[in-house]
Each structure stands twice: as C-alpha cells, then as structure tokens.
Image 1 (cartoon, one colour):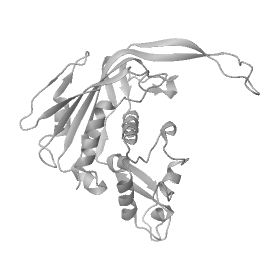
Image 2 (cartoon, rainbow, N blue to C red; image 1 turned 60 degrees about the horizontal axis):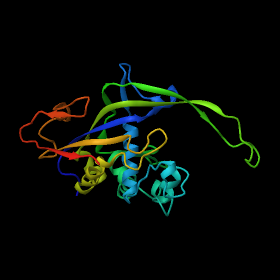
Image 3 (tube, one colour; image 1 turned 90 degrees about the vertical axis):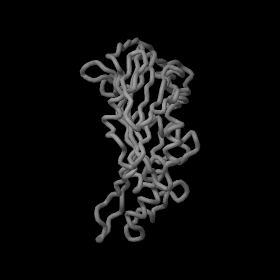
Image 4 (cartoon, helix red, strand yellow; image 1 turned 30 degrees about the horizontal axis):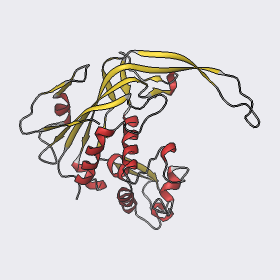
Length: 280
C-alpha cells in the first residue's frame, strides 16, 4: 500500500572541523552562498541517505563508485543487467510498455521509488518518447548553516610513488585542504502521498527512512570529514492526518526556528504533532 499520510521532516546537524560538501569549481572549498552561509546540496544529502539504505541491505540503483555492491560500470548496464537489474527487454518498447518498466524499476530499487529516476527507453515507431521519467514522492532541500561559516584553509603536501616499480619516491606536490570550523546546519524534506501512488513508496518505506535519518553521517568518514566531525543532533518528523495534509510544507517548516548552537523552538500547529528524534 502506498503512503497514506503526508509527511514533513527536518534534520538539524552539526559540522566541526570538516568539509561537508566541497565545491569542485572553487578548489573544493566548502560550499557557501553569496552571504557566506554554508550550503550542502540536496544531491549530497540524498547520496548519504542512499548509502545508509544500501548499508542496511536495500537495493539501490544510483550507487557510489566506492560503495558499489556489484560490478556494473554504469547505470545503464545496471538497469539492463539480468542479474542486478531488469534485463534489456524491460527497456525495449517492442516487448515492454513504459508503465510496466517504470513499475518494475520502482519495485526493484527503493531509491527509485523514493526520489524518482530517468531511464532511457528504446526507440520505436509507436513509442511515445525515448525516456521514462519517474517522479518520486520524497523531496529534500539543500541544507544551510544558521550563521555564516568560518572556513580554515591549510596548505598540505602530497606524496606519491615514483614511476616504474614504485620503489623511488616521487616529488612532493603542494595542495590545500579546507574545513568549516564549527556550524549548525538544517535541511527540510517532505513525502507526498499523491506521488507515492505512482511509485509504490509505502508507509514501510517511510519508516525505513525515518530510522536512518538520525544515522545520516554514520559510516561516511573521509579525509575531509573525519569520523565524528558531522553528526545529526535532531530529526523533526511531522505526520499529517491525511494525504493532502492539514498544512502546507512551507508553514510546517517555518514553524521550526533553529539557533546557532543547535537548540530550537517549534511553534505548535493545531492538530499536527511533531515527533523529536535524537541523532546518533
């Protein structure tokens, strides 16, 4: 059964001495907007949620290279794989209808039925278009810091092995490493029942995501983000009493006010309970 009630949520998290989301077009410095507030893109947050889902044993279509659980070199190969995907016939308009291919993809991968996906669809004289666009019911906004962030840049040296057998040390090269000293970020999201009817995203799927959001940064350590440098402080969860919801997502999200130290206040909304979940 698809999702029955509209859901809004917010995640409050802390960054200390880490680069939460580097900008490759700006020397991999932590992303900021024009006013100096730290920014973490929605794509980055969904990547971390996909990783947590994958680590929990769920089938994920858009896998990161370093966390792949199969040998598929591309999304297309994974989609058309008979072992890990749907097989080539699933995207052949002469053998499969678009709606059937979309349903199979949603049944197979939880990230597809949650966030949506675009699949290439073979050309045919009677095929309407050459792609399958699946619109997912789960949306997540980019996260922004509560105050402008202070960024520290440190010059580092990088050593690599020399040519040949690697026994000779190569020349050291200079580089830069950047970090956000300390900041509180907040992001918002929503789950829409009307769209879940098309993808099959269910109440059970929503519960899975709810349990994983407090663990969003667990197992995500790297040189730029040492273990423990990013942590979820609180997840706020609002479940409405209908598919349409008692209030707009904008009003629900605006009822939350977050301070720079991570404390927060919630303006009560009649008939809508806010569940407060501690981070890990």
